[in-house]
Image (cartoon, rainbow, N blue to C red; front, side, top):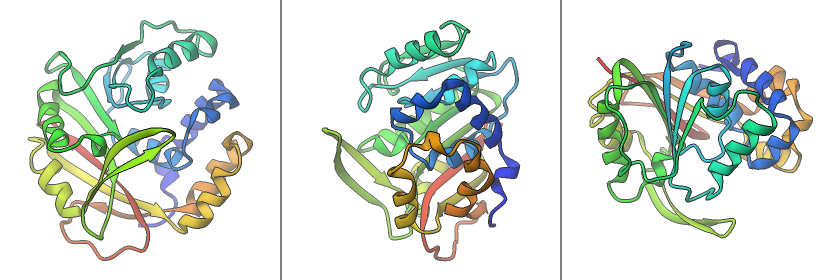
Length: 267
C-alpha cells in the first residue's frame, strides 16, 4: 500500500482547522508526522455530531480542539507528565481562537488508570502516542479498561512506535523531562494490546518515513506554518509511506517502519 493515503482521510479538514488556530500553534511542539498520523486516526473513528470522544494522554494535541470545534463532547485525560500546563493551554486556545467556550471540553489532569470515568459512555476512545509511556504493565491495564468505557459499536484507536527489530524498552530524556518509552514489535502488539483488549480488531496500519534523515532536516529546522496547504498537496506523501494495512501476524521486513495505528470496535 503506497501513497494516496491522504485522499482517504480527513487531512484537508485538519489543515483547514489549523488555519483557524493560527501559525502560533505550530510553535507549541507539533511534530510533522502528526499531520499524517492524526488523519489516519480520525479515519478509523465513527464520528457523528452526537459522538462522545475520550482522548487519553492528549498533551497539547489539537485533536480535542478539532472535535470540540465540531460540537462533539470531548474528554481529555492526561497526567501532565510532558505538559504540566496542558489544561491552561487548552483554555487559552479556546478563549483566544475558538468561539465555543469550555463546555465542549472536559479536561482531567489525572492518571488514566486511577481516574473515575463513566462506563459504556464513549463512542470513540483514542490514545495517540501515549500507551508506550506506561511503564511495566500500565499499557496492558489501560487497554483492558477501555472496553468497559466504550459503548457497543464504539471504536478504540491507538498509535504506538513500531519496531521490527524486537520490542525496545528504555528511559529517555528530552527538554529536561525523563520518561519511559516502549517500541512495540508486531508480536508485542498482539500480546500486550490486541489480544487483551476484549475488542474486535478491525485493522492496523504501519506507516514510516521514506528517508528519516531528510524528513527531519526538512521539517524540524523550519516552522511548519510556512508550508500551509503545500503540506497536503505534496509533502506528506513525499516523506511518508504506508507499508501495510490489514490484520496479518506475519509481515515482510520494511525499510523504515515507524508507527502502528490499531483500530478496534466493541461488539
